Image 1 (cartoon, rainbow, N blue to C red):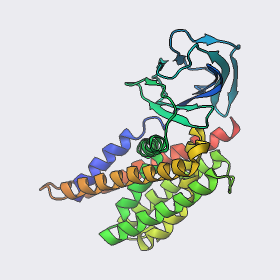
Image 2: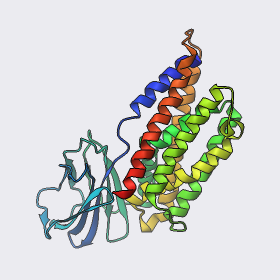
Image 3: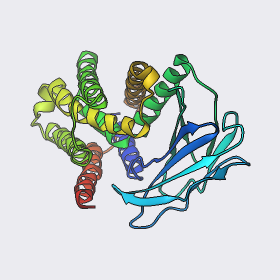
Image 4: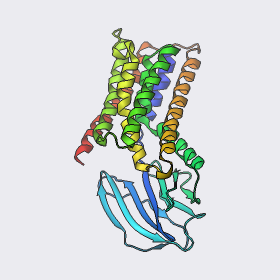
Length: 327
């Protein structure tokens, strides 16, 4: 029944109170024959540097001292390395990948303009450096990166989930998701290509506030007072989708785009975001359809649990992100 589905959604939202997507970032830039510039960016815990280190293959030499600084709630280190024969075909790993860092985004930029992008997880904290990659390999890397980003972006998924608690009917759902997709695609492209510049912290706070708004709209509907989202969900989805697009652009800026295949990488990252979003929507609708068929009835008050939990989590993010303005 619908009440049972609501209870399941409440459990999902409780799980979503885990830490927000906080990746570390490793950039390797080829600087010449067998030489590389290294940039290692870690999210901080207060003023403490997390004990997570890059493990280079045997024979790698550090050729410059490590320079570190605190920047935008992250600890950034830069240095140079060299290895006879280069890094192609070698394995690079991350030691200590746990405790607040969900994953590591790796970007290797070669002299010929091609690049390699990897996402390392706690259960798979290493990768093999490849030789020059073609357009097809770059496209696949950014497609997977887009899918992984949206499925790891709890705030974006909670916004979509809140919309699905309001919108009913296949046509209205398709129209709403299409409006959201179109909006965040526009701002993702505009921000990534430098046509529009918007500061990241206020955007992240507004994204969290958009979730609070839609959660409140769910409650209005349950009280028999449907709001704007119930009447014209595509308007709300498009308006807030513009904000979410800036959030996606911020994530893509962390990884960067290969100059030799910039249009392909940008397009496939966006396609990956849409694929991940559609997988999530299909999963939610599938579970809802399955559970409403079960012969079980729960108290009516359980319908209010999901919007209250979604709104509470989102409001916590609003306060947390506003507080980061002064860090």
